[in-house]
Length: 207
Image (cartoon, rainbow, N blue to C red; front, side, top):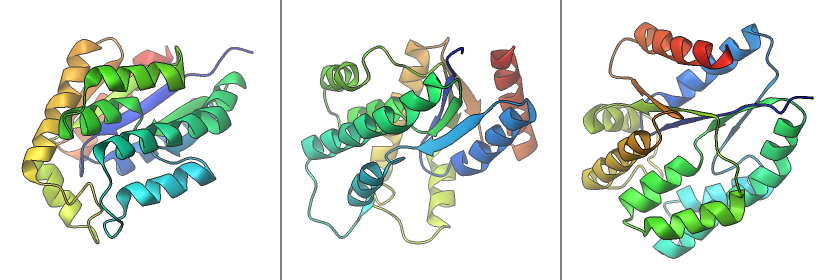
């Protein structure tokens, strides 16, 4: 059985990942592709508990090093228990965020050493990388306005504007470094135009 494909959806706060994740899932299913939808941090019982700790605004101060290690601890569980088994069965995996988010949030936002993140990436993932990444991008003001319109902000959403500017720059740098894998979709346009761009990218990828 051919190995499944691994697609990730990336982007900062309020760029429309949830809406577009559902759209992509439905598009793949229309093409008779068996797809597992998951998220990071999360996807397993332990990884979801780590996610809660990472997002909780009321917990003790989390050091940058602890935050980075918690992200990769959750990822290690996720890979072994969900992602790898699905890919091995020939299923496609659609994941809301993956390691590009770590380069953006911990590398860009927290100014952590990229070499450290790369070392952990190799340790936890080996040679596994997404086959395709859709980076949803919007100006910081647009994303934060959307995020604030939700309920209570989590620990990351509560960061300052400068943090999100660094995250966005780091994301766009990843896209420059990996143009064959990462496709940037501008989401500060009508949803139908966003969906058309996604269909063009995913359709070409399926073929």
